[in-house]
Image 1 (cartoon, rainbow, N blue to C red):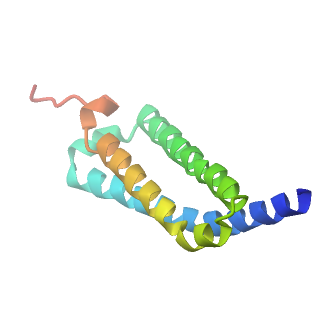
Image 2: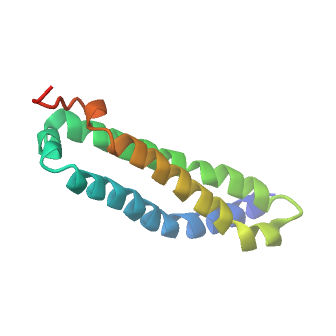
Length: 120
């Protein structure tokens, strides 16, 4: 049992950590595009508090990514281990799309970050 757990966990780490790079690149691209699209108003967000908030959100996004480990390791203990390993990319894609939607939501609204339009 202990060796099987170690093997399943090693397999999960090998699979998910490589994909974390793509996950973070997608989320970073969304933030960068939103920042550029909202220029020059977004320039006001280049302050310590805004950058700290963005860092916290990035850490939370990576913490949420770790939820895949729970599902993956449990699924590998099931009788459907080989099928799961073949189709777990579906869980990855669902997670990327969900995280991308949340990232878009948080990065598209400057007022949520404390920006006040001087024309108002």
